[in-house]
Image (cartoon, rainbow, N blue to C red; front, top):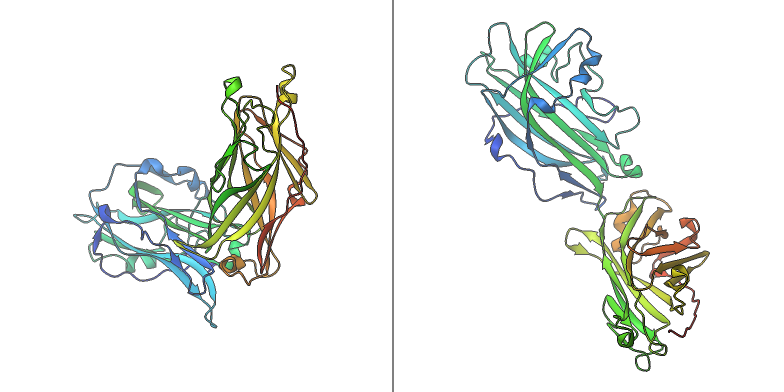
Length: 432
């Protein structure tokens, strides 16, 4: 990318020190000093002319593009690093990446030709004016399809034209994260130009970066406090993430069970993210051995890398509806877990003798700074509300009923923590 709206700059090139085959992205993301953003490099990957999108030359009528064989030369790099750009007051202003590379051919190009770079850029989060993919630079500063102008290209070559240097420093402003992660991918190709309107594209490499809010998340959950207690009910797994209840031995059935599988997540403002999956097996159990209610305690932790803040606790109480089995209507025989959260009422049903799982989602809403997710590691921060975003689509033998709009399910993040408020609807049953 070149200099245009998003402050994309070119920089000069120093001598190359790494051969292309050894180029790898920095495995450690760069986090801004104020903890707002992190920047991950994409791995540098070899590509051939088969990857080249000739359709992008439609902006240059009359040109002929040939997809040629691999070059005889080599690509190397002297710099490939994530970047965070700071404002005058030291605050995070933008994020991006810097790359410096060179192509060296064993000999000068054929008479009448010269080596040029063509880069295809694909972007996410750079604004609606950015068509993607596009020939880079988007706002061309000459009438040719190459990355460098001819005056720039001349300054990037050696005397015989067997070497040409490349540099790019794409950046996206912090405000780009308002609608989700920002991404830049460059596909850099070495080409040979005849000085007129014919170009042969050779091989090259892809590179780029991803910029996200600097908050990772992880979840955990435990089942506690069954009602009735065990005994007189039959249950196991209290204090773990997998709970079972009821005696199905008389029916040749395992007990009914619930389990929570945690998910890792990187939340974005106003976008739902999955906190985990709730799995449910509907066993045939004897009356008098069932549990009608169980607390499910979630811990959501936020942070960066392996460093996480104090978990926020969500205390959920689930009503376990153990239906009587009539053997006529499988929908009527399906047991279910009842969620009542403020204005939300939702039931997760599973057919008799079957298993199913359902994703659980949440969503962050900011009351101020759109990049305040970093404050999730600070229990004193009150600038965010986390809304329960509802169920996903159940798998296996499950279905849901009475599910309203997700916005009515609310998990509130306060200075005291994150609470899931669940009302109870308790039914008992006699099982055949």
